[in-house]
Amino acid sequence: MASKTETLMTIEEMAERVAHELDGDYFVNLGIGMPMLVANHIKADKQIMFQAENGVLGVGPRAEPGAEDKDLGNAGDENVTVITGASFMDSATAFDMIRGGHLDSTVLGGFQVSESGDLANWKLPNRKLGSFGGAMDLAVGARKVIVMMKHVTNDGEKRIVRECSYPLTAKRCVSTIVTDIAVIDVTAEGLVLREIAPGWTPEDVQKLTEPPLIIDRAKPWTVQ
Image (cartoon, rainbow, N blue to C red; front, side, top):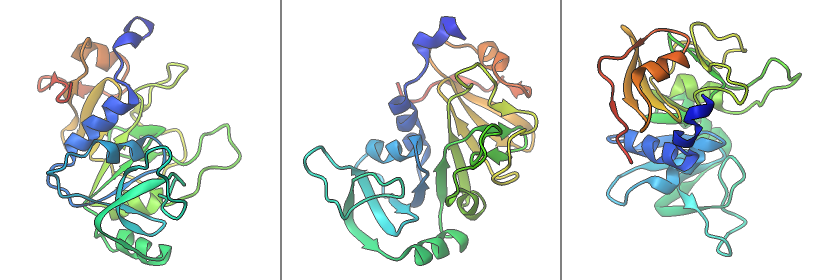
């Protein structure tokens, strides 16, 4: 892994790749952390309404320094902008939208994803408390779940595993995984390696992935 660190995709590049994945989606929720950067990479011709569970529909990119409005924030307490046509609601109504199945997609961070699409993203084993939020509702309420995460931990531990060893957020919910080295689809056939980052080979990605990958369909990273 160390010899390849110079070719890891940056968080911004990962966010740009996820944004490319949202073609055809309209109502999308971005999870706290890295996924919130995706809103900064949406092209003007895409018709996407980002939803925040704190009660905003129509979240735009982060506010530029000096142009922040303290009354405009997303679920991660970041100062954001809103797009034309945005609306505001209480969090109960925002969760009605999530739980009612009205989201086309959600982009969530992850600690682990299993080969069957199970997601663990709310609690690490060495912590007494986890990060409670809307992830459990989003994971089962959205029609498509995209996980954006680094492929391995800082200690080199694999994050894409046969079975999650961390507490689960939801079972069989993940559709696509975008990491700093690959794009992987969760399918009935197994994990399909769809794209690989520059400087990597399918065999490199397999070495850092616990379950077997279907690698014969791998193509170069879409956004470069």
